[in-house]
Length: 108
Image (cartoon, rainbow, N blue to C red; front, side, top):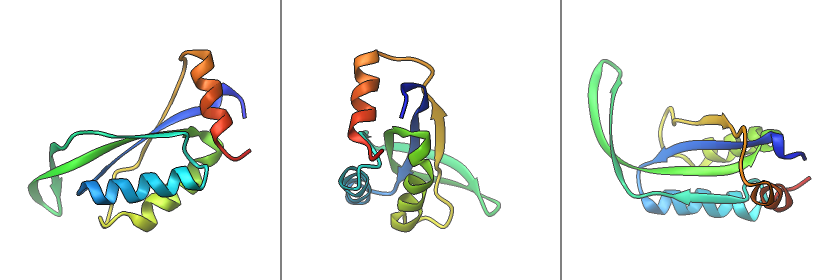
């Protein structure tokens, strides 16, 4: 896999246990090189006609475009929400040695 295929997948989960379970699965399966589990944040959104406020744990998952479908599948399987946020962002640049490390951690 080449470095230009590095992506960042973002998701929010309801608690730290869920975040740790997803992160562990992605790392063990070599689907992510690194998962950052961030501090809790408050999310405000409209769901089924109501304005909702909830505390969530943001996650940043470093992976590759070719692994995205499997990363999404793991998140959907393990995530308790009916419709979880799963967003993929292209990484257009970065420290070449770091991007090479990301690639080396993933299944080829």
